[in-house]
Image (cartoon, rainbow, N blue to C red; front, side, top):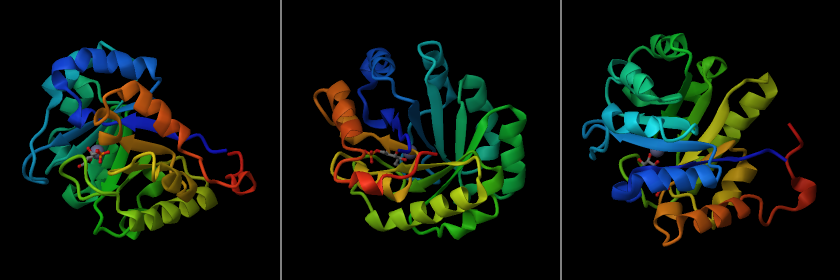
Length: 231
Ligand code: DX5
Ligand code: ZN
């Protein structure tokens, strides 16, 4: 059965408690921590920059999964890498020279991801996938947490899954936006390797318990005979 990793988005967590949030995520064995970086231009909201990420780096070894919803990500990628980013995910719609962007992050020894908004077809990423470490399918319009999951985006997951498996690519599929206990199993059976969740975790009074219940929902309702083959 394919292992599906969890990348809690701290965007809507209580930042006055960020230290205990990171400790909780460590204890919950989250595989990634998802940082939603927004610049008020590529998306309406403004969130946080490398100065906020830097002090958090010393608190945990968890992979910092950095989602840059910003214009000109080439100008800022190195600053986030200096602050501790492990995965740098840029938006296809915000990058002028994708080949150079990929090289810039890889030259720093970090993982490069590319994300596509709901209106961007999955085929726009096909020609880059052999050089990507991660593709991020947005299942909401980027800009804020707590929106409704857009199920049609699962067709992009299925498209990427078949390309990665048939070409034996080293690229993981992550989905981001509106994921919760009711729909996570749909994303898992469509073929994701990682799930971002914000409000499904930090909208709960007990985020640690919410993580447990979310993980338990990943493969519910799936007939064991239909389980994805062991990779
Ligand atoms: C939206 C962000 C998502 C969002 C996830 O622009 O990229 O990571 O914060 O939060 P939920 O899971 O609440 O949709
Ligand atoms: Zn995100």
